[in-house]
Length: 315
Image (cartoon, rainbow, N blue to C red; front, side, top):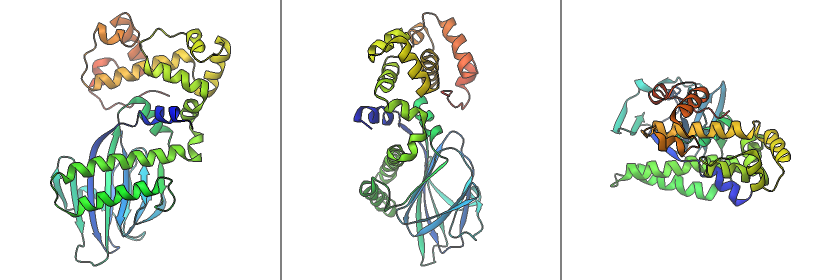
């Protein structure tokens, strides 16, 4: 993958940290049952010891330095062994450090200790959400296997050091490092052969279509036509239209409309008011036309969308 297409993908991996926890767990009889947290991704990384993650009727054994990334909201359990009974998270004796950080200690007198950092993150940008939706449900990254091994090992080491002490600002450092860790996990998958199953990533990797997508993404308010976009990438209107539809799985103008509406949705969620300037920046000349299109694509009018935790509609 060339650097431009690589940067295009990573540009949208802007995380909104939702929650983090550090668990210190003794022996192998413990188990924590975690619910599905809607519209989020979750990861667990073992900073010392070992554990088992049970998800989708499969067991994944993790040891020090291993990481599991759960792309979409999915209930699962983390246990000391396959046989251990998992108890609901909200019944556990957690210690609330702040609104977004907590710790858990179980069987602390047992000399065999496992420490795990768990993170819940949300990718708010619609393209980032689309990327997450194209990833497998679960990615297991072994310490010795992932391509960014040395970098991730250093991040894990720093997280473990912060988590073990009572340093000023330690919580902030842990959450920032954890964000980087989650992005690195996604980055590693993007570079892997498995990502070639993703239609959207393949479109961005394509020299011509990737350039066209960059144009649409960077200037969503411009009056794009199939012909003008074809000229940008050095293709005839027909050849460009056919290739775009074949690789992306949608027509140029349909994709542009969905992109604009999803950008609008993100900004609306951030509290931006919908006025004439707002819609003009997204290529519309009237609020009424924009509002009709928004409801058609997003399935709700603006006020309904603003007040609900909706997923984006890029498929």
